[in-house]
Image (cartoon, rainbow, N blue to C red; front, top):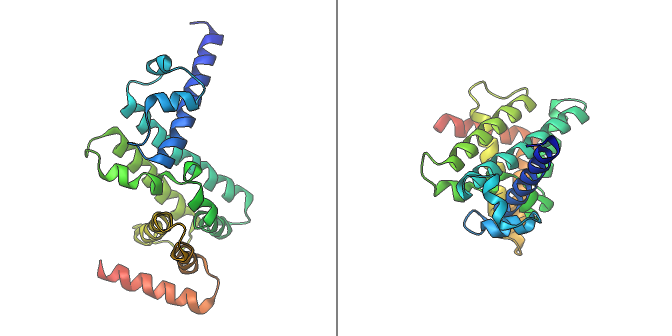
Length: 211
């Protein structure tokens, strides 16, 4: 294949992957069809199998792409900020925002695809991609928190609060409870109030002592 044709094929593959990554985060795996993805990418359905083996293959790669997108975001925040704490705060505030709640297509794949992954087979490509993305998120947030425990337990609690808050806030969208959930999670994880921070740390330690 000529170099120009290979470059065009890779461009088309990236366009399909970007479209799929957005659509599966917005509509879920079962809510997306291959023709819909190809149309969103501006390509014909017939070209799909030149780039992906199956919808299952596409969805798994779309999950990886969604997680990689947030990995780059965390790296950019770390590079732009004065230190790890500032980058962590910026990431958490952005994550636990109404903007993130309202734009799942550009949001975190860990929160958006949790339900889909929970219903897949244990050995599915989607589950493998999702778990790899989750492990990367754990590593990244651990690096952004100098006081994180070496066994990652407090980082896991942090991710559970973040992702759980976004999922619940989306489920409650349109009701005052939605913003209350996001605010409560931000206050729990991000607040600078010394009293609240001490309460948060004690609460997390008490929780970790019980599990």
